[in-house]
Length: 221
Image (tube, rainbow, N blue to C red; front, side, top):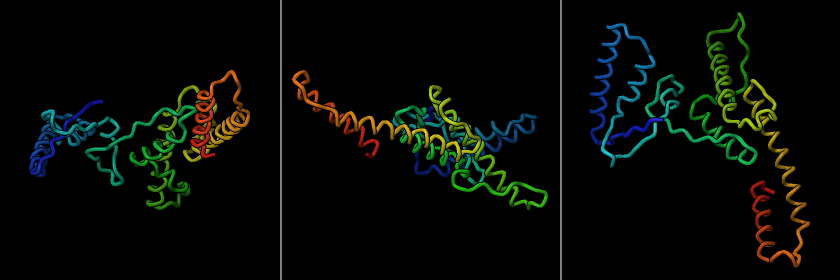
C-alpha cells in the first residue's frame, strides 16, 4: 500500500498536460533503448499526476488494484476508490455481500452477475458474439477468484464450490439464510423462556432481553 498526495490546483490542466508530455518523452526514450513493459508505462501514466506535496494538501490512497483497474473502454483510470471488503465469517454476511457486489462493480468485473451467459462460441459465431462471450468468461473467472479470496478459511469448506459466480453467490446465500433462520428460532425460543427470578437482577434481565431483541432486528424478524 502506498500513499500519494495529490495537488488540487486551479491550473491543474496545464500541469497535467506538461506531465503527459514528459511521460510520452520518457516512453519514447524507453522504446529507443529497448526497454519493454507496458505495465511500467501504464503505471507511470497513471501516477503522472501524482507527486509528493506538502502535508496540508489532501491525501489519496492508491492501491495496486486501483492502478490495474480499467474502465469499460479498456482505458486505465487515475483513481479508483476501493472499499475494504472483510473476510466472510459467520456474523457479517449482509455487509460482506453488499461490499463484495459494490467492489466487483468498481472493478468492472460484475458483468457476469448482471448478464446471463451468452451462447458459447461455435464455428458460425460472428466477431461480436465472440467478444461478448469472452467478456462474460473473463468477468466470471475474475469474480469467482476474488470472492473466494474473501471467504475465511474456517467456513470455506462448508460452502459448496462453483466455477460460476452466480451459482457461487447462490450457494453462499443459501448457507447463511439457513443459518439466519436457525439463529432466529434459537433466539425466539430463548426470549420466550426468559424469566425473572430472585437470583437474577432486574437490570441484567432487561439487558439480556434488549440484546436478544437487537439480534432479532438484525435478522429482520
